[in-house]
Length: 193
Image 1 (tube, one colour):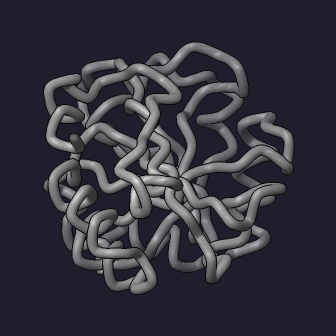
Image 2: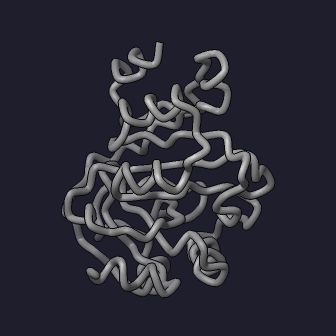
């Protein structure tokens, strides 16, 4: 188990490089870790966050109730710089869902250095709530850096956050919507029909 996984598995908060911007992560099942991450970031506790897996197979295995059309969409788009909003009828990962437990944000970044991490994490960008996204570790707010349990320097990142795509109605009618433009090449969405 690597240092990142050891940190988040015990409910620590890690500052790490994703494939877009620097992020904060903790164990998605740790109420104390999630509370600390939100506190460090200054984010209201009722705001949803995404659950991040570092391998697509782990994400698909954790959400067996996804229908075939939605699973195919995940296989086309992930790993990559996209956050997908999915139906969550089993109300999995409730700490990430905020007031809408029937919806779940999912992220599988393309970060080869973390590809062996098996612990699902709750993640958010490493900036004060509402602040600018960060592309270099040195630019992360000093107040955030002082309070995390682990920092990983991944060099300079692209700096554009993930594209957020709502797939909650995709299974039944192939309908999706882009909630936030971001780092995903718009051409990738054309494959969704």
